[in-house]
Length: 195
Ligand code: GDP
Image 1 (spheres, rainbow, N blue to C red):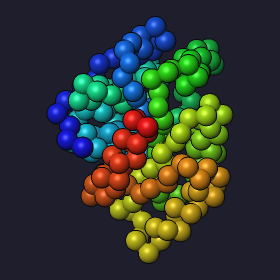
Image 2 (tube, rainbow, N blue to C red; image 1 turned 90 degrees about the vertical axis):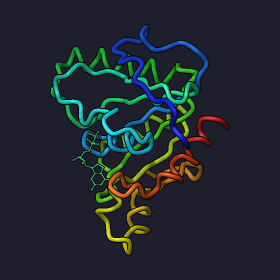
Image 3 (cartoon, rainbow, N blue to C red; image 1 turned 60 degrees about the vertical axis):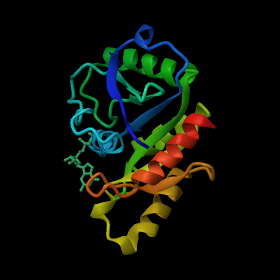
Image 4 (cartoon, rainbow, N blue to C red; image 1 turned 30 degrees about the vertical axis):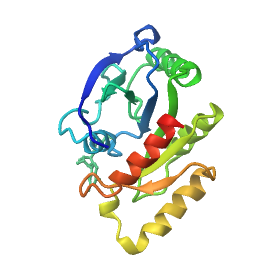
């Protein structure tokens, strides 16, 4: 896909800040450090657009990017760290719940998993939660360049098995280092946005 325009339009900490409009959107989710910012920057061909890892303690926000004046990417904060108070965590949980449960524009979720390792308990919990909300999920195994090609299919199978991924949810390899998987990622994301 040719990206003519990509800009961060709002970092929303509360539900009332979610942008209006009818544009379809995809959320991107994954553990901190999985390579989510790199994925966003690679598929959008924008070097510093998505910042790398939000640091613990920083305000958690859903970052809405408006692409080609047609759709949104929503960068969800990386899970897997918990250096915030219980109160903050609960408040944030409500924002996430509101978003994933009610957001009509949300067409699907890109869940990023590190291709080198077995999905973690957090990864499994997130996938189950997304399926509970009946969302289609595209599973992207990141950092493929770190896995020898001869082991690719084994690692993909392991991700499918541990997540108990549904048949209709594709699992594919990606590398921000080499841009491997970029075309397929767009094909799958376009399918989610417009079908
Ligand atoms: P985020 O916390 O999920 O946004 O992860 P980042 O995009 O900041 O990436 C975390 C680290 O992994 C950084 O040091 C990146 O350079 C590295 N990284 C991200 N994607 C890849 C990849 O495809 N291949 C390799 N080798 N490293 C990657």
